[in-house]
Length: 280
Image 1 (cartoon, helix red, strand yellow):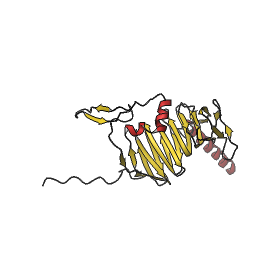
Image 2 (cartoon, rainbow, N blue to C red):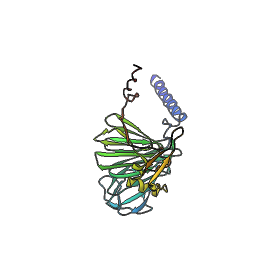
Image 3 (cartoon, rainbow, N blue to C red):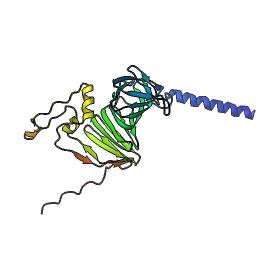
Image 4 (cartoon, one colour):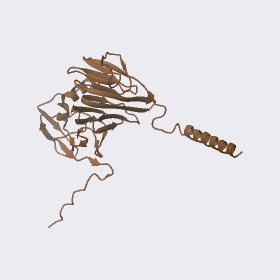
């Protein structure tokens, strides 16, 4: 009888646990019932190849092909591939690149999308959703919820995130973090973050990889002019020779600025400067 009572108690406890999980939507509210979904390929310039996984044979990729999780995308010196996710986000893999599709899971407004750039360059135009889209490099991961940004890795241990629109949070293995906004750029070297740079509109516009992708996205950058006049509310009109402003990227800028990434756990972002001396 004692054994029967114990067994009945265990069964009741199991049923209660199942009921609680079901009533809570399966436990994880952010990513319920996520389904692995393939991404659709479009070859913009050959050659673009892929592997179904690490160590498998390399195969030519064609427009309309579908790639699944763990696929490895490789391009030669002229290759350019465009890839569409089920949530509406878009990625391009540029020449001489190696990119792994680690996760591609969506369900309604939820998603779990993640890839890793080993070398080369990628462009990401992410559909805004209340869920993560991640792009990792060696030593760091960038997380976004809706934005346009580029990731470039001349070598495996030297990579750069550049945000054109939106917001990207970069977390490094060194416990450093950087919150990047439109126009911000940070380099990742051997798992550590360099100071964040804030680029001018001209610096963004004249980056060939970014300009190419903005053009493909139908967001042509304006041509350079000899003279552009910018008026700021409450200030006098200033003429800046040879500069233009890209709408939506973050307003007028006259030079590159830098700031130091924070270390996780230190929300203050460093020691504030001392107050200016008083009169006399």
